[in-house]
Length: 396
Image (cartoon, rainbow, N blue to C red):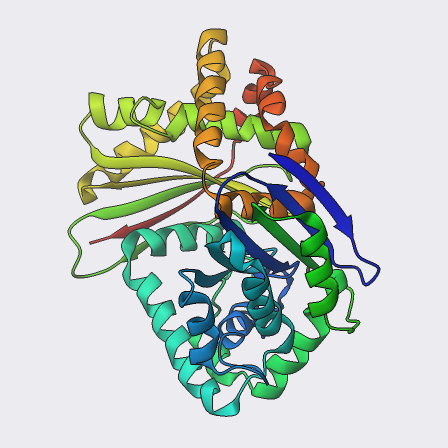
């Protein structure tokens, strides 16, 4: 693998990892997501993502998908807290096609008025889908209990917000935000960097925009129970504020999560499932960006056993301060091994390179093993000293 990076005069950042395989991922991202939204506009980043697929001056919705799919490729997008990204995985010889289509929908989306109401309804159904899924609902609500509005709100927004957004509002925001200086192109695959640069220079629009800033993120700690009919299992989440992770703490959190709740050998799996038989599934997750960070434990259990599961999870979290050197070293091997498995997927690599570029520079991505190996027992102890937490329980 060979990594190269360049910032064009118009401000577009280009990242490239060359691989000797016949598959390429092209990902074009704007450094803008739901964390940048105020409460009245919550969901606008996600709505823009949907509308970018609804046509440009050159292409209809059908043509956008057809051009990529007819050569065996795929096309999709995602919106997160700090980035919205559009991506295609294709045979490497079709790089120019994939870049042309993605740059077109990214910079030149036309936001057709007749598609607005339909897509508004689609997004409202997406919101309902997440709400109806107990696990998805719980993991969304724990963020709400950890952070005040607007940051704590669901990325897709509310049905009221979505239904109230106009074409003019979406188009104006898009034209101000989707500009080269706010954007990152990442290509992972068997292509020449010079060709990528040449195509990007040709396809980029000449447009300036506004400086991006995230509204103040305010923390809180709420413990909440929601009753719901039609389910037979309680879903619960426990959330902990982690500090806005610096370079070292980011990697400490990865090791911390692996030991506590990732896999069948984790502390929580052994204690809550294997020894007590209280759950089928229990796991941990980290959600961390440049401006926020929190840690979550999720489990599904019988309604009568919720308190016992929460109590065990909290005790195991606190006991992370007592991890042995042997356990730490074994966890490092596990985390590094997991990362190597992820390297197979060019889309995963492109996503991580873009996120690293936003946080501290894409070059940091290639220091993962070194950073993980530098984690100490004292680092894990600091993360375990979180006395306040939030809970959300969805109960029958």
